[in-house]
Image 1 (cartoon, rainbow, N blue to C red):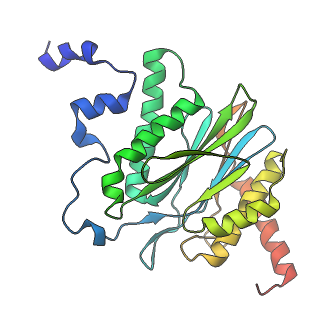
Image 2 (cartoon, helix red, strand yellow):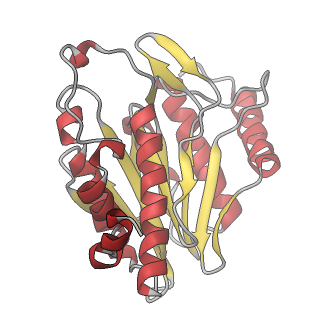
Image 3 (cartoon, rainbow, N blue to C red):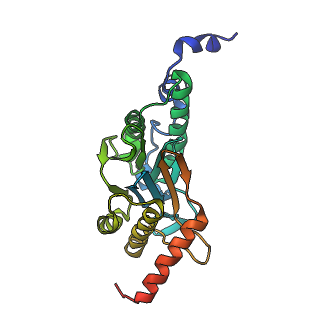
Amino acid sequence: MSSDAARLPAEASASFLEHLTATRPELLPFGQAAAQGTASLQAPHATTIVALQTAGGVLMAGDRRATMGNLIASRTMEKVFAADESSLLGIAGTAGLAVDIVKLFQVELEHYEKIEGTPLSLEGRANRLAAMVRGNLGMAQQGLAVVPLYAGFEPALASGRIYSYDVTGGRYEEHEHHSVGSGSTFARGALKKLWKPGLEEAEAVRVAVEALYDAADDDSATGGPDLVRQLWPVVYVADAEGSRRVPDDVVKGIAAQVLSERTAQGREA
């Protein structure tokens, strides 16, 4: 048995992040020394994410566009994921770092459950994510920020909870709804007017699509429904039945209805 293998039991930790930091820090997506001139680096950025509480849990949706300066880097990027069986994670900011942090967070939650035999509480998971965001602070100071939006189903309350973050790892619980990303100002305006308590899933999907459409209407970095390429927002829900993606056909039908109604209105602004 190698000396490394012999050390593993003594070094076992319920936190995969702590274990990786102690044993292989070079594998972390953050915490590395940034190269000179990183602040001027052009990298794809993910944009607008919305989350809202529903009658039975929480819904999260994101547009599909990633930008790099004034260019569209991708029209098909997915920015919303199932973090585990009862929670959702959306990303805004530097796309490459954000996707790696999503993967690390998913492993962190799975690792904890395997070691401890029970999942972390929703608040505990939100705190673990805050530590990861804080670990990226050095890169954020050089323009490579990652700002997630986290939400999940809270069994004790039989409802959904939403958490936002700042680049320092500050964690804040949001109520009713929230949005992050370059189009969030416009999305929040729509959410304030359209959200109401007790939204059923189909109603909540429509509110999310409307909010993302409003964001895309005024923010060039946010992409709206793409009829030519048949691209629609990515939408997930988390409730007592678990976390799952809303089928694209459902989102397409609701998006098509929103577009049809707005076309019929013929409004300029």
